[in-house]
Length: 184
Image (cartoon, rainbow, N blue to C red; front, top):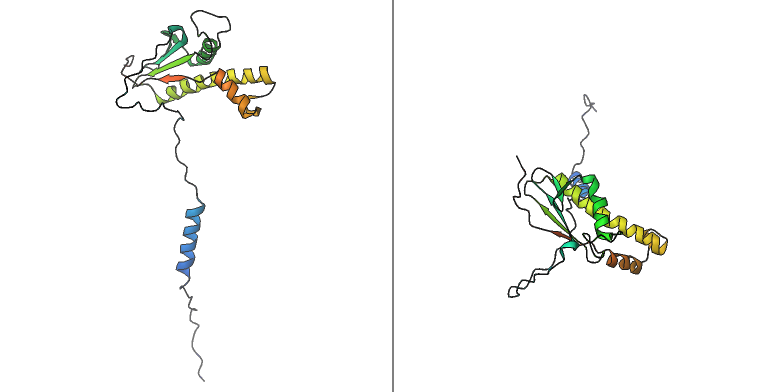
């Protein structure tokens, strides 16, 4: 019996290799999560009925805090220039009105924040303004929770949280952006 010269490479059965690759692909597709960008969570009012007359709600001027951001990223609150650092304190003082100032809101339940931006406003400043306005409401709610219930707002029962949310209703009216000016 003659011997074969040299060794041949053994053959690998690749028939199930495609099945394994397919199963791995399916596994990674199912287990991988894809991060999606989330916008600012703002609840919009329902669209009016087509035949319904416009409902012009008249607010007392003193109950509206006007916040304006122009194209030059300048913040104006009730027509006066203000830094972003002062916005939260000013908003809290306006809403709560501890000194009963006749130029500020009659009560927290009647306070409305009117926010208007220019089309040229930077996204960064827009987000900062929103954050400061929301932080003002959150701090007021937290203080009320501590004062009334002796606990942090997020540790309260749902009914207690709703009671505080009803007292400090977060009413931020955002107008359609316009070309207000102030840009270069």
